Length: 70
Image (cartoon, rainbow, N blue to C red; front, side, top):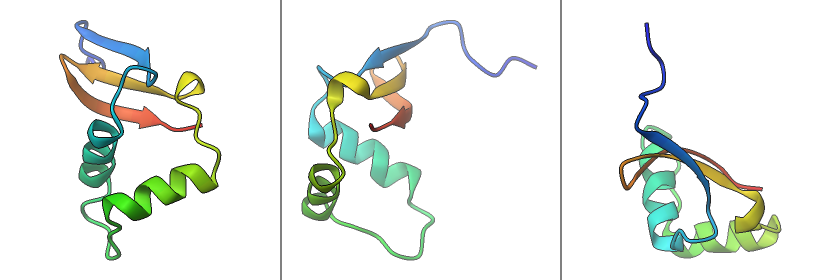
């Protein structure tokens, strides 16, 4: 079984918009009972010291399919 498609690419989040990151976050946690909106998400990233240069995502084409925010 192949877990990673060969055309996926891992890149830093430096050139990724916060809107795009929020979309991926929203999709990843869609099944959670408690949802946060975009403003709450941005506040959480700021509070936790989010650094896009130290954060990465797996992209399938232009779509984020996995991410880590540091």
